[in-house]
Amino acid sequence: MTSPIPSKIKLRKASRTLELEYADGRQFSLPAEFLRVHSPSAEVQGHGRPVLQTGKQNVALTAVEMAGNYALKLVFDDGHDSGLYSWDYLLKLGEHQDALWQEYLEQLQAAGASRDPEVSVVKVML
Image (cartoon, rainbow, N blue to C red):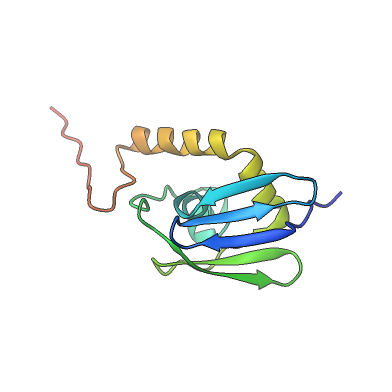
């Protein structure tokens, strides 16, 4: 079974969100930062070893493009544009947004990293 294709896709530049609506009534509002740190690209997924994305708090989406009939290509203002977000992957992100976001925040904390691009965390070992 294939994932449903959104019936409406809206890029809200002011709020930096991608809104997805489905024919069955489901709706998801996915922030640009969330989409950026969960990019399906090899740069982020690291060929099986995900690379923690830091400093993406202020990232914005600048464009959304169709990639055939199976995905969206998202273009971010930090230059990242190599991830193809399949319909399956977008649905997974929408349905599990809260858990995925919490997991990301925990990974940042464990790494001593920050969402803020202006913050560089340094651990001092005594």
